[in-house]
Amino acid sequence: MAAKRQLSIRARLTLLFELAIAVMLVFTAVALVSLVHHSLETQARNQIEGEIVRTQERFAASRSSSDRLVVLAMQGDVVLQVTNLESTKVWAASSAIAEAPVLAHQVVDPQSASGLGVRMVTASKIQSTLRQLSAGVSGPIQTPRGPGLVFGFVYGGGISHSVRVLLMSLLISFPMLLLLSGGFIWLGIGLALAPVESIRRRVDAIAAQDLTQRVPLTGGDDEIARMARTVNAMLDRLESASQFQQEFVSNVSHELRSPLTTLLATTQRAANDPTKANWPEVVDVVTREGRRLDALIDDLFWLARHDERQIETQRTDVDLDDLLFEEAQRVRSLSDLNVDTAAVQPTRVVGDPAMLKRMIRNVVDNAMRYATSELRFASHYDGDDAVVTIADDGEGIDVEQGPRLFERFVRADPARSRHSGGTGLGLAIVAEIVSHHGGTARFVEVDKGSKIELRARRNVRGLPG
Image 1 (cartoon, rainbow, N blue to C red):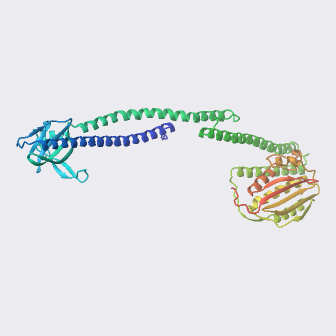
Image 2: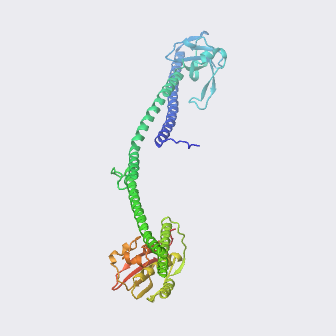
Image 3: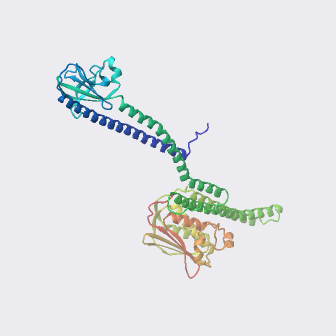
């Protein structure tokens, strides 16, 4: 089943902004219609109240007490109807509603300014007239026939007509506004995302062609500029990783080819003439090169797991002095070298026992390859660090070149190292382990031979996996 295709970021942002604008427009329309309706009603009531006052003044000046209906002249859209106090008989009315019966009754309305309101009559025979009236206002009035009530209305649906016109205008203009704003938003987001798309195309081309190229920087410190710098930093790391991988594969191939070539040549010569073959020598060569291959594969496996952060680490008390004494005994059993452990002091750290043991053994094995007659071990505390030194009395190295020797497949003397079984990875593993334990590894200047100093934190807070 094919995955459902999602909208692009540009489309989603446009829809989101359009939805937000639509919500704001709806609220604006509701507020505008309400405001206009309220304003029209207020204006109408003021006009009605003015007409009521003028009608009261007219009745006050009149001396006629005839029972006939008084027809009032209309002033604009305002119509008036005067009734008795019981609202049962019409005494006067504007010309537009002169023939109409009583249209409304006065009721108490606490929300109005006068405390009085208007309730329209619901008789069916006057519904057509009632539909023409709005904004009713009532009040008392003195007439020649006695006290009565006066009702004022806007006639002709002026308020509702104005509101309908406004609503129609909004219903026409708001969709057009949404359409125009959507277009501008679409273009604006496209312009904003254009540098991102340009960077994407550039990175795609770089990944497919040449990792030495970089994304052009736009300058400034906005999000696009920071992203371009971040992408370039990532490309730097990718280029370094690619070069490292190529060099690593080349070095591994070279390191594996040498023992394999020796094994194949030795066994081939013995197979061609078994009767004349020096079988003890063949066994010695096969054993030596096999061990060399085993050591190389073991080191490669450890480094691969380390690079993938798959090495499980422990945190426990480890006595580095005990590890040095164990190594001293091992060296004495394997060689004629003298091992001086007089400077070994009790030195304990919190770390991974297996990793620390491998660290010291790799350094000791390296020293054994170059030592002439003696190795010197030492350990002590230096502030928060535990310090271990391992020295030999061999030819020595240039200390300035020391940092390179902790890199992978780097040897001080490649020919001698290969002959003695070195893989070129031992000190690289030492550097990784000591870094895990918050320390450093370096060669120290001595008068004769070489000396490696290992520093580890006495109680490192966390060991990376």
